[in-house]
Image (tube, rainbow, N blue to C red; front, top):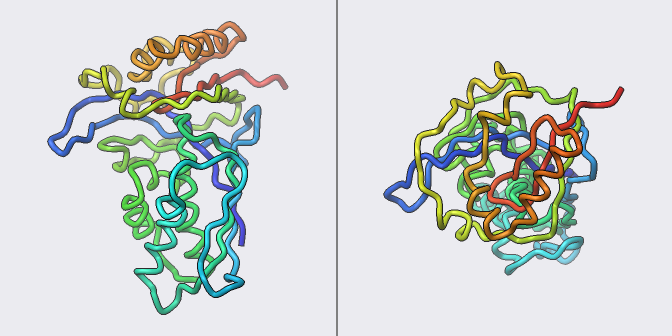
Length: 265
């Protein structure tokens, strides 16, 4: 069984509070990119396949873009272990094939997508009947962004990103251009100069705001810090507007930059 994990962009990203547990509270809109409902300028989907293990031992096979770290820490593998611990009598050894296309450290959520899609894939493969609500709770054990990819629809998110409300935002009449410059931005460094403050705009009202007005009201708090270290990313964003984007932004903590353009019919 095979699936194609897509990525996301952040439309607005406000850091509103430093929590006692060391995390930060955020407010953002997650928007899925690379699905059939959106047109992008490039393929931004990983490929994930599971089949019964040839040697009766589960194994993760990685191809495509390089993945940092030990396979045991890969979110795809962790998703498999979550279900194995939950349903040990049903989950048999699998050969897991992950082909990476979505760049790492780009703010596109590729690793989170892989983990969440793996949960869905196993649920379908074994016909376990796990509800979306249960999958979301499992996904939260993998990472803060993972629950979004269980829904994989536009969501207003707060907290660490795990508290979500559906948002009726449709950008299918626009073209989204994503540029991944190959710069890995450290999340720790991106947070280093952030001064949390109340969100300047309620992103739940985004659908009522004409996209031509987004530039004046909606921003990514991490741009100030990241653009200081990587001025080429600021140049990429400016280049999007120079090319006619109606809105442009860095996504997540970077380094991918996207522009939203009117489609040419």
